[in-house]
Image (cartoon, rainbow, N blue to C red; front, side, top):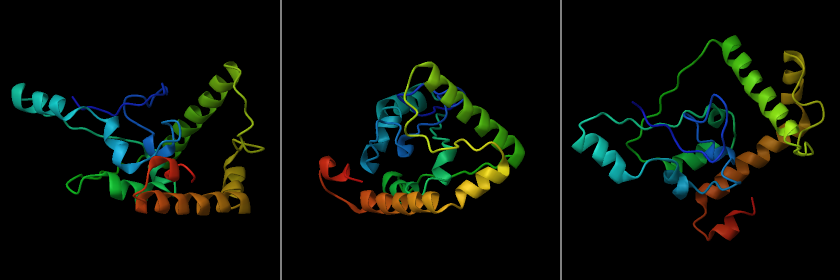
Length: 168
């Protein structure tokens, strides 16, 4: 079979296929050169392919990478030139229902664990599509995306110690 990435978080429906590395789920750590830590050791891949003779495709199927503005420049630095990008599209309603369940489940789990919700924007998650569309077009969200794009570009271009990178 395929080998999905490692993630320090147990995320229902996503743990075996999404690393969430560039989404900041490694405690905010997003250094492109360290992305390799999400995947099996090279000796493991060699053993599977050469000794056991098994195909051993390795992947990260993190859909949030396509909507996070800082990810593209980081992936450009992190991924080997021979890597292939495959984008699978789902029927939009099914994809959004799936996302909604994951998002709502994450919030319910956090609340049940007594975690603070202070980071959540007011009226989030939106109650309906029109509210989601309105929120996505708000000045606050546009400013967050602009900040995210700049942070990704700075992280990808920087070749400085980690302490300096973490100022983004």
